[in-house]
Image (cartoon, rainbow over all chains, first blue to last red; front, side, top):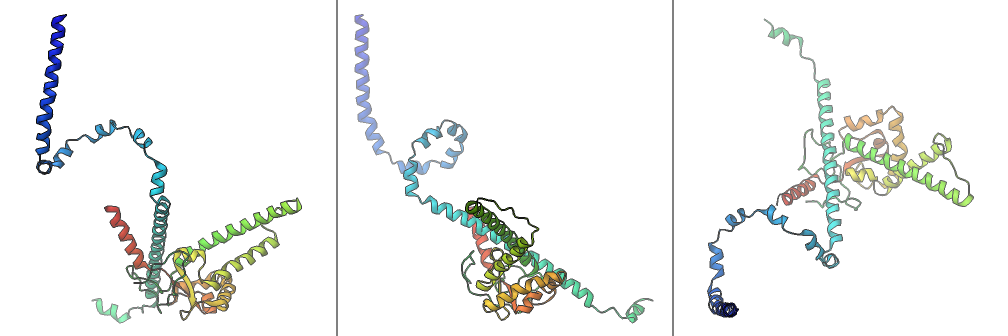
Length: 136
Length: 190
């Protein structure tokens, strides 16, 4: 029993010493580090390539995060109504532009057909002598 | 560059271009003021038919409801009834006359970006708008031959346009529409 309690006391002493050393050594060491220089040496693209996004996302509880979002404050701060209105207006404009463009294409196609038809009817028949000239 | 045409917004009257655009000519020519072709006119007319008939049906339903509330007896409208047909014709006249005399653009024309103007490019006005509305059925009654002018005349005017001294022109800017389309494609890629 005595040996055990002596061991425990020793462990506690070593533990507190280690903590003291760590505080005195590690903190100044970390403070002396130039993080910008270290980051500059890290190839972030390569690091990101090694990250398995799916695994990461599987560990994230999206519902919990969303539950913490203050939706009312978000709506107050962002003019969502104007955003929706602007996007729907863009959609309508796009649809109208597309429809008009198609209609104009059809107008042009019809005009082309009609102009071909008129040319076909208005073209004079080739003179008979022309055929006679070509034939041996 | 001209201002983009927005639905329902007043805009300057486009001047007729004098001749139909050359066959095969496409945007980015801006089109505003060119004589409108058959397809645009036909699609606009189809839209107007659907809209005016739907509005007429709504009026009938509203009248029936009002009669039920006021007199207690409901009215059943027989579509073949001469009074309903007469009411429909009056309704159609009012629909086209109202839009052609005021802005020169029916809702269908607004969607398709075409506008009725005077032959000289001036605002269509009450007199010409009314004459056009009255002459419009003539183009149908002559077995549709009144519409052949849209295909064969260089100024693409139908019989009712010739009678009323009007023309139908594009009132939208195809070049602006193309620029908007490019802008959207560009922002979509980013």
